[in-house]
Image (cartoon, rainbow, N blue to C red; front, side, top):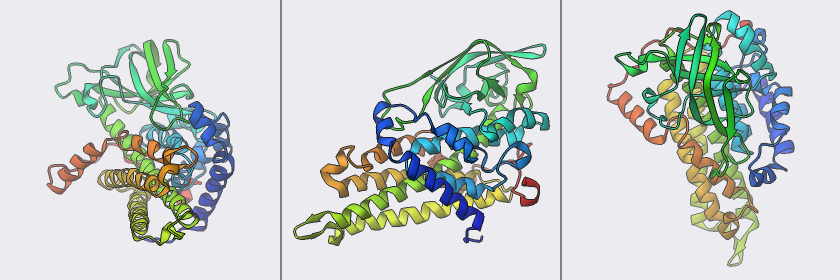
Length: 401
């Protein structure tokens, strides 16, 4: 594994950092307080090509690799988690799912406008009564000739009220012996009759982002919008989660870095008992743990990205990266508040927002408990990854352009 970033990688880091730091950072507190997404964010991310960063040029993307995706997510979440969430759902959970499982016709018709940022995408898996237990999904899609009629509700859906497309998993065979085998995946255009969406307010964190619900009432979905074969919905959903979890891990790494940088500034500026508080060993201990966590989290997500670039199955490695980075980011934010003292408990400083935002990532895209069970199952050899019918295509600089 080569740890040296390419010139293209550094260019991505610089471009995304400039956007996030110059355009979003000055206004993020205002939108976090209002619990609204900054109205320019999606358009600017589309203009910069971030929304198609790791998709082939022939499908409207920028032709970069999966490492570039991770670096972009790190820089975005170093300013605010809501920016990275856009990448997780639009790119990781939806667009990469289309790249992996879609037909050539679907990629040209559905993926290309998403890669260009002309259409915004989201992912519909979680329901009011089904989160970690995917087999408990109640949404139904009944085939009637050349269409499926979709009924059900999806909950806690990022970008629900902003998106044009949703990759939705629904039950097509309620009598399947294994309920996991009765699920199928569809790309639903959200202006279709029978679709309604709404926003959820009052969240602890990620307040400057869009989180909501999608309801389907006798919604017609054309056969040509089914992704994969009937009964492959569970496999498709899990492969999409591999990609989404990668972006979450990379983003949480950026949040650790943000906590570290904020703590370093404050530890040098704040004086107590006649000297900088950074001179005190217990403050140094907290900072040292942040340094350790940042380096470890970054190595873990870069390893997962390296494996993605080579077309290697990376479910275990991505799970580990997501679990470690999200837990570590919450701890880093908690310690950053401790370093800031009473000021850290107010929104005068960013660290209180970091803590609120960090908690969400411990829950979504697989709770920390789910990832602990996965890692134990791999170690005990109770779990082995079978090949999928479709694997995420390896990065190839020649054909990606």
